[in-house]
Length: 95
Image (tube, rainbow, N blue to C red; front, top):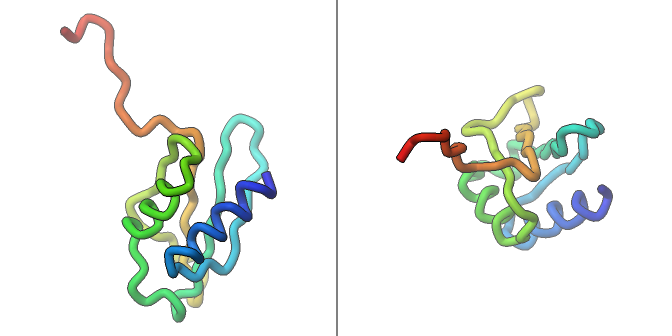
């Protein structure tokens, strides 16, 4: 898991996004990564910029919430679910 954390941090930095830390949450059923950004260094940061950086990694499907969480006054946090299906499932008989 350390490889994916380093890969994500490098990809964000290559796109000009200063990421304070990348932390993989330990849950065997769900691969989630918590991204922390210093709000002072990232005044123009958007979910779309982060999504574009992660898409360039080719890590497969992932899901990003529509807004940041502010767990403290200085940092913006974003929890990304890796391996998520982004499209809605097709229901049987819907033809």
